[in-house]
Length: 244
Ligand SMILES: Nc1ncnc2c1ncn2[C@@H]1O[C@H](COP(=O)(O)OP(=O)(O)OP(=O)(O)O)[C@@H](O)[C@H]1O
Ligand SMILES: [Mg+2]
Image (tube, rainbow, N blue to C red):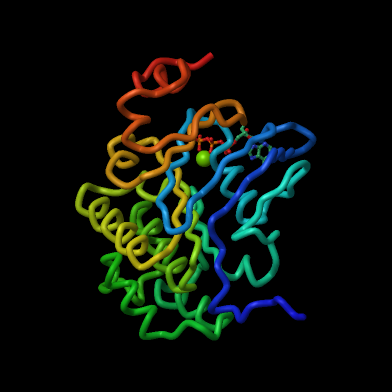
């Protein structure tokens, strides 16, 4: 019997990460980590600079190869169909050297499930509706981040990976994007984000993964983590102390 599901019915979460290690240039960056991402949750991956947060998101997205262990998406290993249900917004967005609208149209041209009305609607949602013809490379840092998020949402992902999505945003844009993240979550998208903004993690995430030096030190419910972190490292991180 064929058990390949039609793409629209394909569920990509819960995600299970089991004894995962990943190397870059032969350096061990993720060291035997295990945790679970519940279906339709918002998970925040927290930890100091260099902990491995971005590499972890890229590994989930299939951009960094797994050297040991496995990642399953609703009990299945990754595939072309599963990758198509994911979208990632990178810490440093890469945009086409074309107009804002062209950047959306390009996604449109390679994916037949999207359309230009969605593109315009999404640009409005991220507050870029006055920028259709503006060269993308001339946008400010925060505007580039918002365009990059709109581009990711155009793919109608079921799993959205957001690497520090609001670092460069002013308070108004920050609220706009956080509201959008919450709306996507309510619609049923599973979201994994990284952030150094603890107030944001508190506002958005029900599930916290705390990592340091490529190891998962805690997986905790948001409320519990901020009230009473289980490890000394997380306590120090939250108190703004250096982690050695
Ligand atoms: N392409 C690469 N080549 C070599 N080393 C890399 C590469 N990408 C990441 N690393 C190393 O992997 C480690 C984890 O990097 P990563 O970018 O995941 O950190 P991070 O937790 O996202 O930090 P930040 O909070 O600064 O974004 C770092 O020591 C980094 O130098
Ligand atoms: Mg990073």
